[in-house]
Amino acid sequence: MLDLKMINCTLADGRTGMDIGITDGRIVVLQPHLIAEAEQVIDAEGQLVTPPFVDAHFHLDSTLSFGQPRVNESGTLLEGIALWGELKPLLTQEAVIERALAYCDWAVARGLLAIRSHVDVSDPRMLVVEALLEVRERVKPYIDLQLVAFPQDGLLRTPNGLSHLIRALDRGVEIVGGIPHFERTMTEGAESIRILCELAAERGLQVDMHCDETDDPLSRHIETLAFHTQRLGLQGRVVGSHLTSMHSMDNYYVSKLIPLIKEAGVAVIANPLINITLQGRHDTYPKRRGMTRVPELMAAGVDVAFGQDCVMDPWYSLGSGDMLEVAHMGLHVAQMTSQTAMRDCFHAVTTNAAKILGLEGYGIAVGAKADLVLLQAKSPMDAIRLRANRLMVIRAGRVIARSPALFSLLNIEDRPEKIIFNDR
Ligand code: FE2
Image (cartoon, rainbow, N blue to C red; front, side, top):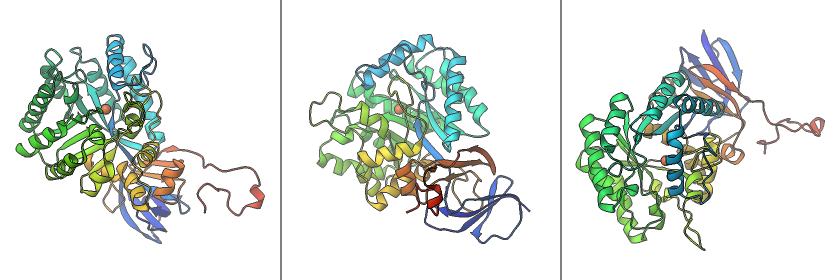
């Protein structure tokens, strides 16, 4: 007897009529026409069933703080950092925890069950670090939360920046972060990368660095990150996040750079919603889009994911934890409109992101964790087009969120199907 059986599922790879058998929180059978009985049966009615959404890049410490103590008037990264600096002395651990947990509730409702969050380690009080360590424990039953030690004010630019970051790692933050483009000089930025990569190598940790989040075509810290990754044997354990300067770089230089990134096994995370609004702010017209070169990186075989980055904070006043909204924006900004490219955008918020985060048991396969999302869509392309309704979110074989299906009440008698949004 199975715990749960989901029948008549369409999968992201195009298979239809698939049944999923679940026992003890794992997928134990995956086949059409599954006869075995189950305690609970869910009929997917031919809709798309996917593994959960994964956000490879987020800031859970600042989320939902929009308007505190004021809003970002210029819309730039630098004003956002200054504004966060104004807010930090006013934060309480309780308020950070409350906001982060509220966001996690939104995330669950959206089928977002794994998040890699950066946590600011520049403040010697370690208030936000302690807050997110507690949140990580509290959400464990339903969200896999990874934390990156992020020296927001600069590793070398902040007094005792390195010792604060090491304290955060000692407390249990598991990934080494960085922000080389915010150090005082290009040389100091490069030095920060060397120090941080050596620290990660010594401790056997991963690296996920904010890197070149600027429109400056000469901001080339990704080259240095790839170099130290290779020098220290960190291949497969390093991520360059944002990389927006690559948008503005000389094309010849990029033709050398992308193969270096691939050779070093560095993965890339782009944050389309944030970088389409933060970048190009000093341009008149034409205004640069500012997102890194996603299709070119993917074509070179680099692992690329999309992140949400910010929701209602000093950098971005919108957002809802909806990774389909992130994929939708990434698709538009990068003009990824072919059928294959649209599927790639879906992978950027699911399988690619899961691979970069190293999530165990992710996917729809026998032996995988029974973490699933039933979408009101028939294909990944449809899911992005509709930012599809999450009809059901399942964690370890248990339904943890539901949304009613969208349908029109008009002319309902005249239509063979009530659900008209995705029946073509
Ligand atoms: Fe970020």
